[in-house]
Image 1 (cartoon, rainbow over the protein chains, first blue to last red):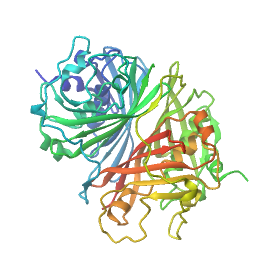
Image 2: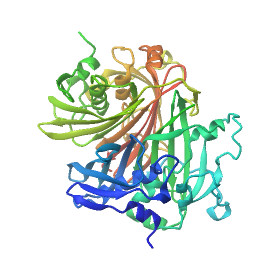
Image 3: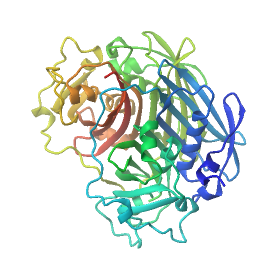
Image 4: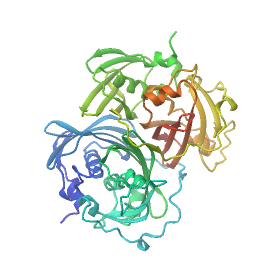
Length: 270
Length: 270
């Protein structure tokens, strides 16, 4: 049996710039699939394209409509290929209707001066010392595809509508069962944070990501070094405003290197 | 005489989803136009489209190649229109070659619980108390399209290659001459920060934005309230890694409201 993530990422090529996939029940969310898996499978369409150049540097996915259970088509079209960068246009459709659009930037990295600047979350115990969150019965299937160990900012156990000062979450996370990290897995996991409004307001409200951008700092060597061990994720809202809030999230290696950063905009009802 | 920004944003409609514009010498950068003006004019193509719904919520622009001086075509196609959101696909071409691609999300905002979470930069004197940076002779024309008052993290006056602990910049900025803020102006200004690597390394190196995402928290009321007064911008790098670094930037109103946030990935040579 292959890993659930590999099953969900499976694509059949159906033409030069076209391939076909299907939703995976294990990654189902409240309505349609988990946004991270949609991001991952769209990235995968470019990653597996025969003319692909280099590695992913950035991905933006726009969630236009819920993806229905079942088959979907992805168009992955290289818009422009330069000497060391390649720009992609991606469209996920079902019965000819657009469910998600995306752009991706790939590139060939060359060794340069490199340095971190943002700092990883402080005072974080090793993953083995943090209890794994057990998914409650009311959580959607995709939550069980991850082993999450929340250091700070867990999903509230009581939604008592007492406003909290912030919505920051820090957690250790890996695929469940463990799977070596790759770009698609990184694109998927960075969407794993529950809506910040749940934490900030301790209130349940319909909420869903409408657009997400992921910048990758990891290359293949860093991913290899991370193996299948948990990565450290952190997320916080910047502002909540008339139906939308944005979330800045980061994924760090277990030795403190920034693997990916993201900014997403999330719809919420109230 | 209209404002230089309005001149640069001027588009002639050339079909249902097509319009035509031209580069403006006042917004020229080292190679091709200032990235912010390209973002603004692509957003403008959706803003002025007859079927546009609501206001901009998010914009991602991918800079695929330098835009040559002269005319360009923009295709602005609504991919999907829902009850309260609309997804756009945008392509800027010259002689049929892709120079930039973009996606945009528009939406109708509805009043909900709203709150800030990120804090504006601390210890910032009012704009009138900060000296306006005078553009040196070696700076490209677009810099003179802004009145910038740097509170912290100015372009180094000496590039002595002494590494600095961080690359944070905080500045007051407005269009020069003053112009009331709108969405296009906001999309343009959020790209106004010089490459973070100049600050961090005090080293000049070829550098250019390859992709930029902007999330808008401002609506028309907030923009109206901001008038043409300076906004407060802040930017910092998260990580520099083998040819690319990413920059998180924010634009704040002068009374401390987050107007827009962004994440961009920047190529640098070394």
